[in-house]
Amino acid sequence: MKKTLLLALAAVATIFTSCSSDITNDNDDSNNGQGKGMTLIANVEQDDTRATLTTSDDTSGKWSFAYTDNDKVKVGNNTINDYYTFTKSGDTFSSTDAKVTSSAADWYAYYPSTNINLTNQEGTSKSAADLYALAGKTEKATTGAEGLTINMKAQAAVLRIVKVDNFGPCDIYLKTKDGKFVSGLKANNNAGYDVVTSDTKVSVFTKANEGNAGIYYVIVPAGLKISVYNSGKLIKSTKTAGLTAGKYYTLTSGPTTGTAEATINSETKTINWVQMWIGGPRFATVNVAGDMTWYDARKNGDKYVWGANWRTPTKDEMDFVDEDGYTTKKHMWK
Image (tube, rainbow, N blue to C red; front, side, top):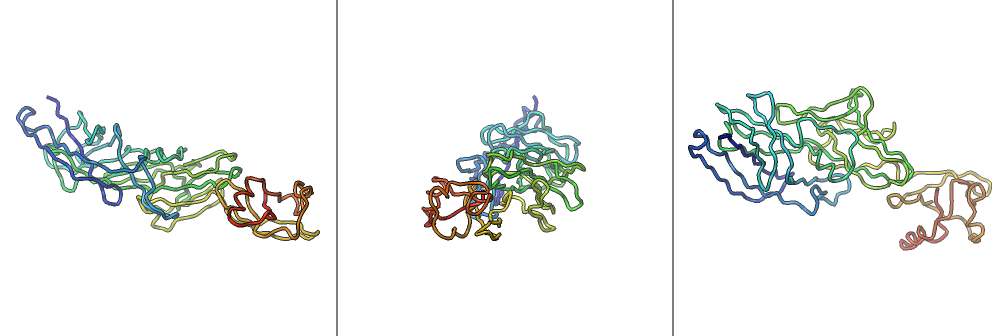
């Protein structure tokens, strides 16, 4: 009779929330005295989505993950050179190919694979969950005859990329401290992943310039100093210790405040601007001196009162601004 080894992945407090479970051991003699393995019913609680942000902190927080049916986990041990594939069905992961060892061994588990490609990610919460690197090992050596219980811990962090406008570039790539480009993760036999790099540029996430303002989620290595770039421009570098596994970090694709030149009464001045919402226009922080006629307000380009960098807000934009108590004299950079 072919042995079926059942794998149960126990939740780690900072990553999962799980309920108590029932364990059944069946060591009958119909399987050469080795039994049918261990079955662990593990209920992993989750919100409405498969992977969700569970903090109100807009800078960093915990990323909550939960397995779904047909998720696969790669499992090996220190006596073999390959990995078994365990597939989730209901509350258990199982494999009909996995074999127990003749003596106690250390067992390792990796999700979603032993090799994770981090390039050209979709940027959705689902795609982030599909690539969210987890790894763990048994607390003590075992043959696996009574099943496996392995605590899986996060091995990656999540970048929450805010593409702030509908016309700016969004080509996100990562560099290590030695100038290599991050391309993926590869499992090691220490219940973790090594970072895979490329000598040539590869991107972890790209989005067309036009019309794609929004929030996107990208999986990146944790515990490694990296620098995040957007289209050749450095956004931010981590400290030597890198990002914390299991947390997400918010970065904007470009600035949300800045300055632009304005020609006021034939004099060139620098005017501050601020972007108030994702994909929104850049509003001047000062008003045009005096009132304008509707005729002048509708002018554009060099004929506009402050020059070609500026225009009058649209009605929809003004409705938004008026709600916050601003006046219709507000102008913005185009």
